[in-house]
Length: 214
Image (cartoon, rainbow, N blue to C red; front, side, top):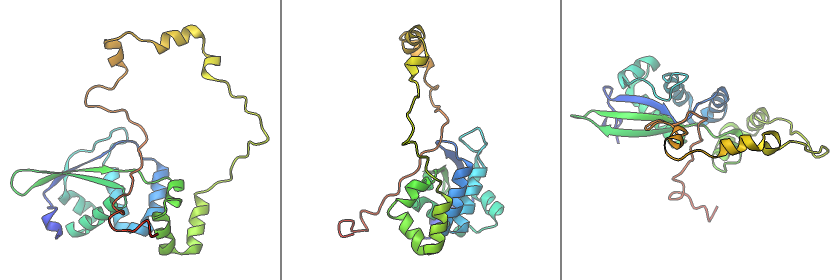
């Protein structure tokens, strides 16, 4: 299907996340994902990320003319880069038809897999290994590893919560009155707590790949 059947320059979009991305996520995307999806897809991800305010989970609305000018790319290049982000689990796309031929999109940025998940994935790690070769793969694996802390010769003396806080404090903190007090503990309707983003899971292999044979 041609890109112009799916996306027009005038189509509006907003960027969102369900958690906060970190500088470590940026390193993972640049070093582990970029060899698989290419620099244009990484640049698109970073551009969408930059549209989010540091303390908010939603960007202002914009249209695809704007991102074409920002990245100096054609709509076809942006569409193809976006599809790679979707396919590898870094982006979810939601589409709503508007009046005429126009559409509006929500681009939900997903966190990358953490290094342990990536290097034990069984699909992405093999793909990366074949893409960059044994030497570079070993170098990247070493970059994302650190010396393990050996506590086997130590005796853990960490105290428990109940050992630190008095019973009277526990009694007052663990029980609240029914009604309004319970609602005070939850976010307001339509809001969510800001936290670290959960990694997206890859799917769609089952129909195309014989895992039993593998």
